[in-house]
Length: 458
Ligand code: GLU
Image 1: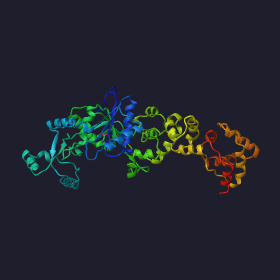
Image 2: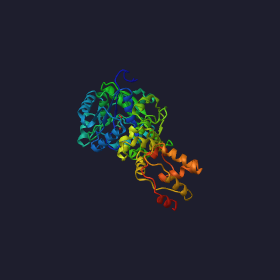
Image 3: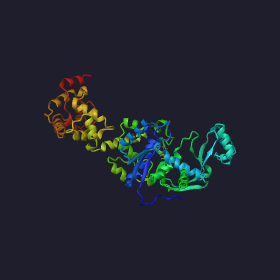
Image 4: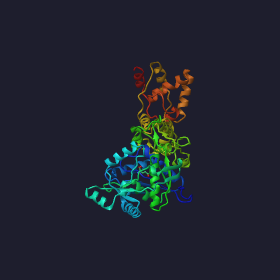
């Protein structure tokens, strides 16, 4: 049984995406859990680009991954690409060959498929039968002469592998029930299975946190660590995400990219705090500071049950997060929407608690700056005209609304909704929105009497 690394070893985690596409909610969960595990322990977080597949990996996807992580605030202490490290992988492979742990297998995919079907028909596990191990040197030479190119497989040692999984508890993989993993394809291309072990060993990774789809892989990789005489890290396999009803994650949700979520107005820290709790025993709570997300994180609170991901829940969580932001957290973005810095704190106090997405603040700012197209019910036209005529002179403060509506109440006898609603509609053209007392100091333009008349006539 493999134990977790010594408690006093500095924690080092890594996120290892393949730069063959944009990051999506499925793999960003691994990023979040690894980043938080490192930060919560005061450790290090490494970004590793698994780009051994030269055909599918691109520089542009690598850059996009970096940008997405940056946007999320998941900063890394060190970054490297597997394509820079072929020498290290080949050295490890040489060692495995020397020790009789890596062997050539010449079967074509079609032959393997046929054998798998035969085994399945006989009720046997469809695993590779190691026929290649029985070939003589002469037979191998003959196959080569035929033009066959072998894959290279790692010889599993046929015993159970078990470990204390950081998420799933005691986990076991029966290595007699899995095929010897291919470490090099027939075209010579090295696969991730070996590269990852070499990197995890050489960069001193202490915790590997990844999806439950890697559990079997871990069984094989533990044996590769051992074959290379390296101490394996601790492993944690988070459950896979499902759709809101427990169904498999739809193609759309599964491939929902970070870019799309950002464009939909999801706050970066909201996505991180959401994934920091989703599937754990702790409730999803809005957080406005990363320190709080880190402090409230515990990998041990996660469970093995599949985790429902509901985009609507995330949207709601993001809105709650946004409304809780202090002005300082959004100041640069408000400036970007044209809100003058001296007015921004008061303006944020007024509109912030009403927003679902930050960019909606832009519309409220335009309304303050340019005035609204008023809405006036015909029966309220007289009251609204009278009210606007007695508006106190500017500058307005947060007291203005109370003083003005108080006086109108005394004068007209209107109260409650009958008093406030026509005024809100006339000043903002909307029947709901920010606290009017807080908004008044920022309303630069009020409708002219003609505009009230015109609106009432519609
Ligand atoms: N590149 C692998 C993947 O994206 C990394 C898995 C791992 O974390 O070991 O599945």
